[in-house]
Amino acid sequence: MSDIVFIRELRADTIIGVYDWERSVRQTVVLDLELAWDNRPAAAADDLQYALDYAALSARILAFIEGSAFQLIETMAEQVAEIVMTEFSVPWLQLRLCKPGAVQQARDVGVLIERGERP
Image 1 (cartoon, helix red, strand yellow):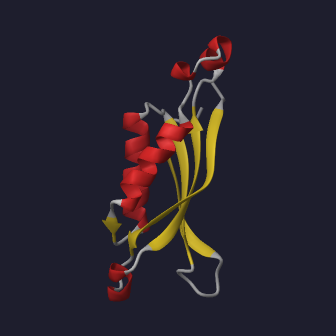
Image 2 (cartoon, one colour):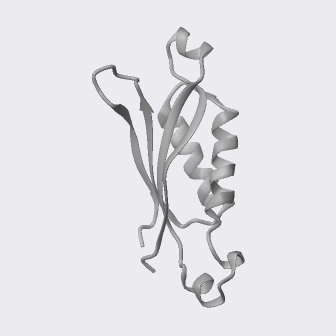
Image 3 (tube, one colour):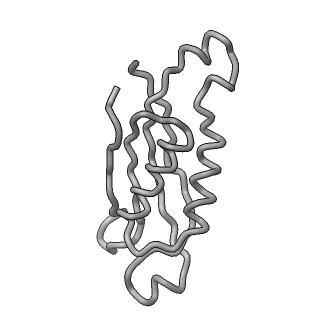
């Protein structure tokens, strides 16, 4: 299987950071996800029940992040990956989590993680 479902620039506002001022304001984080998924059954049946429901997955991630308060983006990324893989049965993912504005001279900074077995 080599199919990929992707979500680009999913934005959420949350409490994230280690500095005192970061603990009192909401900041935007941006996620890009690539998700292994066999699209053939959904395509053959033209039926959402066989597809990776990216709307439901996005809503779950947004609800989680917006209700969270992490110090490190590394922790947030790991927990988002765990949710996606366990709740949506995704066997492999690549997740890029960015924190725009964290370094004034950079557009954004962040982490890129890959979990599971790559298709």
